[in-house]
Structures are given as structure tokens and as C-alpha cells.
Amino acid sequence: MNRIAIQKICKSVNWTDFEWFIDGVRLSEHLKQNKMKELPANTEPFDDLCPAWVKGLNYFGDVRFTWELLTYEKAVLPIYLCPDDLDYSCIVIVVEVKKTKDFVYWERFGLVNHRSYDFSEEALHGILCLESYTDKDWERYGDNIAISEINSEEWYQWIGENWDEELFRRRMNYTYSAYQKEENIIWFAEVDWCFERKVYEDMVQYYWEQETLEEVQNYHIYNKKQMSIKDCAHLIKKLKRTGSDDLIEHIDTYGEILLHLYASEQVGEPLVELLKRNNLCDYVEIYCRSIELMWRYGDDAVKNVVDVTLLERLSDDEAVWCSFGQYISDDFKRYINEELLKDNIAMFLVDKLP
Image 1 (cartoon, rainbow, N blue to C red):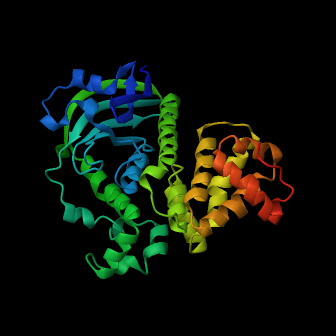
Image 2: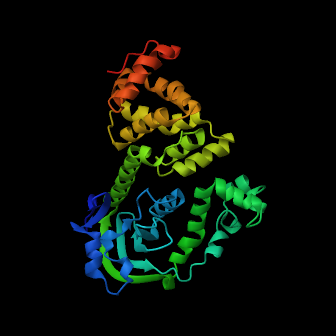
Image 3: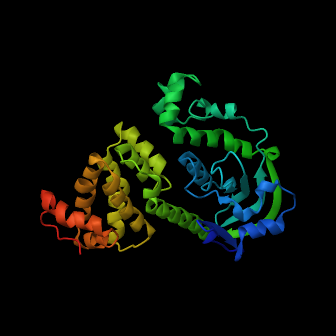
């Protein structure tokens, strides 16, 4: 039985990333020691590459693709990418993964060979790849975008407005299919690692939570514009691994984004339940920081959701309310105590946050 863990590693002065440790040794070092073939010069050293599981890739469709494969029982799973591109167009190191009820096996590592990759063919495997449609897809798209033509005005408009979904479909329908062909992978290292499945899945979930926490902590660096309802929904959908599907289901049900309801279901109620149980996990900070981001950067509609739906609900329980106050900034707390509690009639009897 092998041991797997992740640890934050400083790769340069301004760059830190998680690295996998197998039996206490960095994965990049294992690959160097087990390499059986020479690889292109730009592939090594392996520890200069970017972990494929980070949420800071150029497009969320690629992030969603990676994390979808992490749920598979058997997969050719991306593990490292080129740090200069942060997408799947350049260096892609993969590992062959197989799962059983109790164990997870990593068996060999390879480099994706892009020579046969056809970008025009990839474009046909997005929203217009009708053979991949589910019954839900036919309900959503069967009488609209599904009947359009590639390169049509309607097609360009749809992918422009729904690029994350389009890219995810291309990755699942074309990119991943390419990974299944032996000629498209240069297998360069064989291992025989076996991990306890629960430990492995806990590591994967911890990776997601730490990436998400870092994402909300650094929101101000990468997002300068005012947050609209759509922007807010995009923020919320990235908090959970099922977030994209949850948002699609919400829109299917209501025909639009009802942010008061969506934010309550995805952020407010889960946070209340965690604080009630005194479960002070990473998600408490993730949800609290997300609410503060909505208040700090949101337009009037988004701020109204914070004031009327999220903060009112949190204030229903005194213990929950006091615990929430420990996770927010002084200026957010000052706003709540000096403005919101005075102006919101529904919160007149709520105590100030300590």
C-alpha cells in the first residue's frame, strides 16, 4: 500500500502550487527516477510544470473537464500542464488511473502527443455534437442551438455566451476520446502504486477546497469590474464540484437565474447548517468570503441579495450570527452594524456583530 498526500510547494519567488507526495517523495522526483524514454526538452524538469488540478486555468471549461475525470472509475487523468499556456493545447502529462471499491491504482504516466489533434474536428464536438446529447440536452437545445450550423451566426453567438459549456463539451467529446488511443500518448514511466480509496478521495476533495479558498481570497486580483447577477452566479457555481450542473438545473427549472433563491440554496443554507453544527471546515470560510465578495463588488441587485436574503437568514440564529461575524472583515462588519441593522426593518431586533 502506498501513501499519497499533497503539500504546498514554493516553485519560484512568486509561484506556489500543490505537489503530490508518494510515500513522502515528490511526484516530479518519482517521474524523473522512473522515466524510461527521452521526452522533448520543454517537458522537463517536471517540477516546473503546473498541476492540472488547479482552478487557475485560462478557462473554467478546462477546470470542469479535469475535475469530471477525477470522478471516473477508470481514466487517463491529466496531472501536469505547461505553465505558460494553462490549457490543454501544449504539454499535457497524464496518469492512467483505475479504481476499485477500496483502492485506487496509478499505473503509468504519459505525454500527450498532439500531432494528430485537429482543431476543426474539435469544433464539431461541442454543442453541435448531437450524438452525445442526453435527454436533458434535447430538452434544452433540441429546438434552438441544436438545429443551427457550425460557423453560423447563431453558433458563434451561442459559444460566445456559453464558452465554458462549449469547451467542456469539446474536451469530453473530442479531447478525452483522443486520450484513449495509444498512439496519442507517449507512455514514459510505469509505476505500481496502490492507494486506499478513502484517503485518495479525501485528498482530492481537500485539493478542491484549498484551490477554491485561494480563488475567493484572490478574487480582487483578477476581477476588477462590478459583479452582475451573471457574474455572481459564475462565482457561486465555482464553489462546489457539482456547481456547473447545479446552475444548469436551476436555469432549467426557472428559465433564468433567480439569484435570491440560487444564492440561498448554494451558499446561505449550507453555511447556516455548517455553523449550526459548529463544523468549522474550509467551506465556512469559503462561503463567508463569497458573501463578502458579493457585498464588496456586487451591483445593486447582487448587494440586495446579500442584505435581504443571506444576512437576514444568518441573523435568524444568534449563535450562527455571532460565528459568522468571526469570518468577515472589519469594514463588512462595520457596514452591517452601522448601516444594515439600522435600515433593514426585518433586522431591527438583531444584535450587532461583536
